[in-house]
Length: 484
Image 1 (spheres, rainbow, N blue to C red):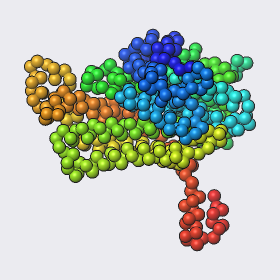
Image 2 (cartoon, rainbow, N blue to C red):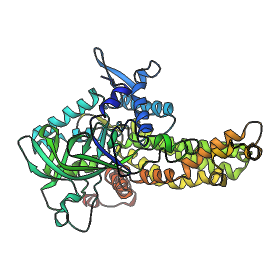
Image 3 (cartoon, rainbow, N blue to C red):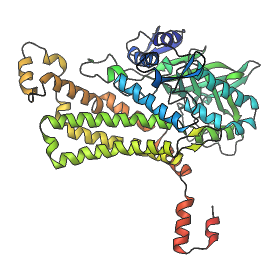
Image 4 (cartoon, rainbow, N blue to C red):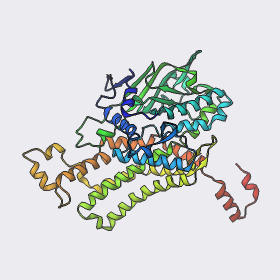
């Protein structure tokens, strides 16, 4: 059941319509903007077949059937430990951070599975479809992403009061399925197998039914789907000077649905706003875990480049420098603690799965996302101004000037000019480049906007305990606890 990297590459050579920089891409697996990140995803597929990684990346789901641990529906704490080990192993091997590889988006399907009772009130077939698609993504080892954000248009108006295509919606029902129009943004859609497409509207008002309340699975090569991608960072500048952007840029796509037929068996909910609201409210109860875990790896990289830089000249002996390094360590360990505790205090879900402790997970997400810009700036300060003034790699090998750069960039017997150049280039790409700025914005909004992060904390924190404690400590009557 486990695919190889080559099988994955072949699966996305399906004639899909992909555009980047105003040009049609005939084969995404060979295009310079897409090939590096596709090769990374292919590497993760291949790792599961290697003896070194097989036990961490996969498990036996039946006789002669191996499946990925990443997409296994979680039912025990060990399942979550295994998933955490999967991400740790994957990112360590590829030597960087990727967000969209499938494990962090399939969890949204598990949230749908938890909402079966709500969906059964509408149509029992929908919950059957969900269970089948969860099994299909797991058994067929598909690269599954999740399309969420719309172009939005004028948000002071209802969708019906402007161009209706600003939000994806159903335009027609047929015996074969529903026909949808509109657009969604999704990272990695152009090189994924399928996407879970769902609404972005948070407030439906009093409407019980809406053509905009629709969720479905769409193959990314389906007829009528167009992928219009932002310009990539890979290949624009030297890989020696921008080693992260040239390998780990994950291409974001405006996915156009131009009268796309979605078969009924791929429809997960339709028209009922209560179902759509439930899904929006629980969407990240699983997927937030691997998402936050990846930010822990960003913290490790910031600590690494900062500590290497200050050790070169002995600045790590100074108390002021150590205090800044401690701030980075606290940030990293705060993320680690929330992830660890969310597994230790995991909760049964409505669908009999096991979900990370919701209050701890969402609180950890707020800490990881909201403090990231400040931590990146702290790492910049520790790296010093040379990350923004160092010449590029071609200068270090140019005959007439390489001796001068060798002289001024060699620090001591431990740090040659080439090692120092490599470190500064890596730090610049991590903290200071246009790709680094893109990454900060991406982390801020990748799952949802900051206000939604805070609302998730509010709705999942147990306020009853501090209220009871305060009531008793202050000697308040029992009736104050009845107010809602």
